Length: 432
Image (cartoon, rainbow, N blue to C red; front, side, top):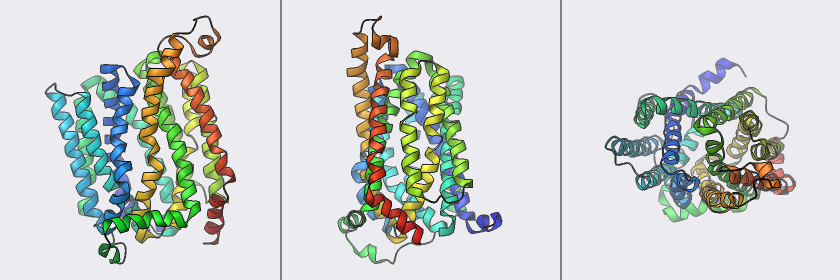
């Protein structure tokens, strides 16, 4: 496969990918800046975690119906409309901040509205990628998407912290709106997205269409079990994300949080580059399982026991270096097994099942850190064993919490390695 052939076959996909990635950078910078703003205002892991809970609640509750609508609606119009409404929500945040009226309640409501827009936009975007990508390029495109996601993870905390520190929250939001405008104009003017489906799905009721996505998963246990495995991983990862500011900001300041997230971004960037460059592995299932086991068995324990910025940075690198490779192989497994004409419905059902644990994890992480682990460590003897291991003061409880989720995350990877239905996907994949 020559490079010229790839660029020729995927030229519209590459425009979509690059401009959407830039817009994602702007959105991620705003999200990071709002975390800094909310933690500086309230100093609570739970208060900050609720931002993500509000974003994911509509995503989880309504995804299954949004996928049915996505399969019958024009993909391009759907993406443009949802992104535009989300941009209006961002304008609302800017207006409230400029008038001095921004409160956490406003952010919770706006994040819920953004989550609703993403609920409809995401399955349309996923199907658009399949429509614009020939099957033989799935591996490389999956790697490119992992690479751009990693690049966003690398740049967003650095750029957001710089703009936020120098010019305030408003500068971050203005950059977000500029990147949205570029992505929207590129999609509107330069990217033709083919039609998907036979037209029969438009004759079905939304409820019947939604059920067809669930029916597909019920009849294809390998795909379903893989999604449920990722749901457990997402539970651990979201508790991790909720607790990370509560560990790093008290112990090392906002700069420590930004630096650790920069290191995770660098590791993800390297992993994304590898995912795009490497040939197809002999076993995609083994890559998925082993990557997650390595990540869960390293980062959480080092964060819990390290106690210093260099160790935290190493933890971020080890925890994220293989995640883009895992995501690329997971993406290929799903795209090659799910027919494109029902991908919107199946991906939406996947979103409900795989991502419902994210708001649960953020809520659990925030509550457990604020109400259980921090008070528990505050009551320990400063000369005791636990304080010698996890430290004293604010952040010690979060360190203990990372040890707990490290054990939970590593153990949750083991059953998937012995799941015969997941391994059956490998046999079907190799026969195609």
